[in-house]
Amino acid sequence: MLSGKRILLIVTGGIAAYKTPDLVRRLKERGAAVRCVLTAGGAQFVTPLALGAVSGDKVYQDLFDLTDEQEMGHIQLSRDADLLLVAPASADVMAKMAGGLASDLATTALLATDKPVLIAPAMNVRMWEHAATQANLETLKSRGVGVIGPDDGDMACGEFGPGRMTEPLDIVQAVIDFFSRGRPLAGKHALVTSGPTHEPIDPVRYIANRSSGKQGHAIASALAALGARVTLVTGPVALTDPAGVATVHVETARDMLAACTEALPADIAVCAAAVADWRTADAAPEKMKKDGKALPSLSLAENPDILAALSTGGDKRPALVVGFAAETEKVIDHARAKLAKKGCDWICANDVSPETGTFGGDSNRVHLVTGDGVEDWPQSSKARVAETLAQRIADHFAAAAQSVDQTSE
Ligand code: C5P
Image 1 (cartoon, helix red, strand yellow):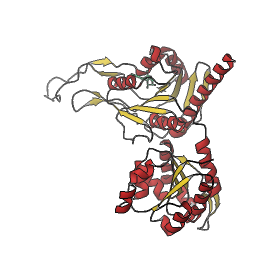
Image 2 (image 1 turned 180 degrees about the vertical axis):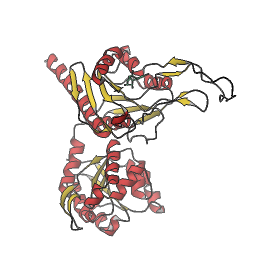
Image 3 (image 1 turned 30 degrees about the vertical axis):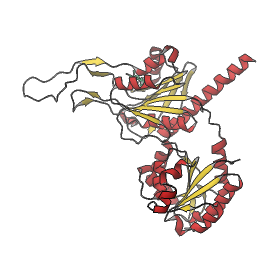
């Protein structure tokens, strides 16, 4: 079931670490090769000797161990794995992963990897329910990290509730499901645009908008999690590049169009970027000076419409082109009009009036407008919206493949 799969098991600090030799044994029974990284916290609950004995491999503990680095650099540890499994995943390691810290061997391997990551959280119920942990969880999910559990139950600390590490056999099942889960978008290339664009006025000033890029980045991660090869073309954002996604950074709408054209052919295009509609007709080559006389006036030129260009791309048109419509009123009507005007296949319409907090916020309410009608999705996190959209895209391709099969019978 797991034969030939190489798993890097990262054991962090928590009482549940005592269950990890059993987890290793059960993964190995199913054919996986397991190599362990043990944090200082994890080593308080399970010994390297125990993990080494069951894994049949060296247990890695220290980032700056010269022999370890010569034998197996920390980058190589994650390169050599098909999957990184963090079990138990403490609140601390989740926070470090969300924040991009690389303070020990475990977090360095997690930051350096472009391999899929599954975590099995385990902590006290209050720590689990704390807003900080929940925010970290959403961040990790939006980057494509898979989460196993935690389970409800009695805890070592005497409390009851969610926070108990999922039992080893169930973790093994989740790993099997991960590997056998159809990666329904395998073989497909998805192009995603994200973030705002910056249109220079002069070398230090620019026209921009409030887009954070959170939704577009989450979509790139969600498509990659379903097996697609993803190119993300992003304007300037304060986000880390999603793992396992080829990310191209651009500034202006024209750069974004050029990068998208360069990335073709693609099977799927999702245009989530808030592209500036206008740029200055002539950006000043030097910083404009205040001379106390006439106020400068900007003359604007229209930017290329990337969504429309991809939708009408002739031979190179992606099979499915999805746009977004950020509206503050008559959301569905405007989305329908946009679908027709731009020539795309689907529009994810969302209300971005200031009171919804969508722009820059963490949640979104989407109405998917297609040629067949409108689907109202519940208000949910941008990560969840991204997963729903990616799954909807996978279902669309599965249905299209099935109808081709039936016609050829
Ligand atoms: O016309 P409007 O900006 O409302 O359309 C929004 C949709 O069009 C989004 O999918 C956005 O990414 C895309 N768009 C684009 N290029 C532009 C303007 C919008 O790709 N210049």
